[in-house]
Length: 252
Image (cartoon, rainbow, N blue to C red; front, top):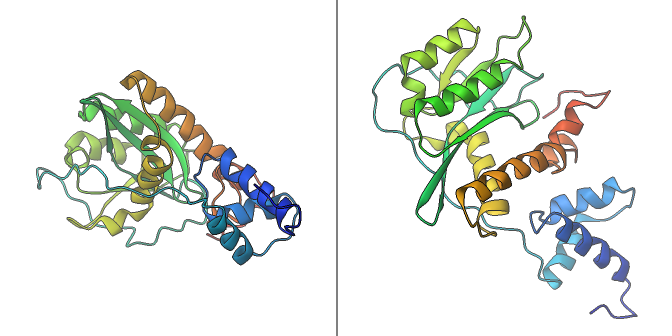
């Protein structure tokens, strides 16, 4: 309970409101940015201290599924070289596959992220990690391109991305293929970070009755991630709000 003599009583109510609104997904930095976004001046150290006092702690990130099974086809060079910033949309993309398990049943998610604003521009889900999963996801992403776009699409060395059909689809759409070095997850850190956030903020804190229930939840979370969840690298805006700002100056 809040003491009537607590000079931070109103701020604590605001902190609790933002923390609950985002279901415990925000640490003190994002809570501070959200408060400032409401037009209120607040010091991040004060927010951090109050959140510790209130025992409000953001969720922890777990490990991810690995799709590397050795070299079985084409391995592309690393064109990104850990330079994840992009000055405009459709300049640099990243992709990967992650796995979820519900009562012994599995669901696989394959998204594409635009590295300009971190937006998930396309994704696909399937019960098995077959090539159709990444092919259908890529077809959705390619519809986002204008005629003069020439993006780089970066992935790890998962078997799906070594397939000749994958390389052919990219070449036909003027997309340059890029791959992380073998066994080096930092080379695809943007996607690693997204999967860790997705699982810590959505998957692990919840229980799911079925794969269909999980699938619906992932749809909703990605909508939230793109439209509502603020990113500090985007000046406290969500990916979509950053992209649609009239004065969008690339400064990731």
